[in-house]
Length: 174
Image: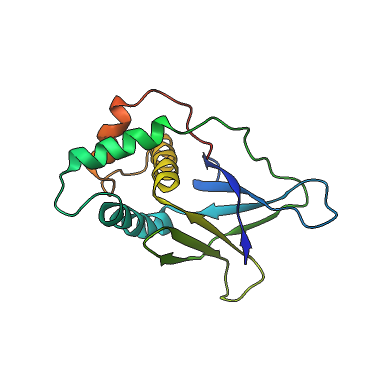
């Protein structure tokens, strides 16, 4: 399984899917990093996102604290997001539809293992995120949900409210 180091997340209207273009570390002798393109459906994201949001709610803020603290943590994460050059796919980039995501949670981070079908197929990559980068990526994914006009019911109020008070950004990069 290959580890993604940088990524660009964007909604592609013609596909009605979220595209993650990820950068893989360069192997010895390569001039530049390789890229991979992962396609995620709304259905898959709708199953994944509640688990990620639940991990943040348990991890980042002491139990029993209210949504205002979550909102503040989200605002701080978004404010710390630095604009980066987008990751662009190359003609030789592998691209595939993600059929499943293996979620591994530890106290320090979450790891998303993106798998194509069938299980064990050659296409797989993973992304490891600590709390702040996870908050930043979730903010970007939320922006893509808004662009796609997908239902926002699964998103917590603290995330939506943090976006309203955070400075405006063209948030499709992570």
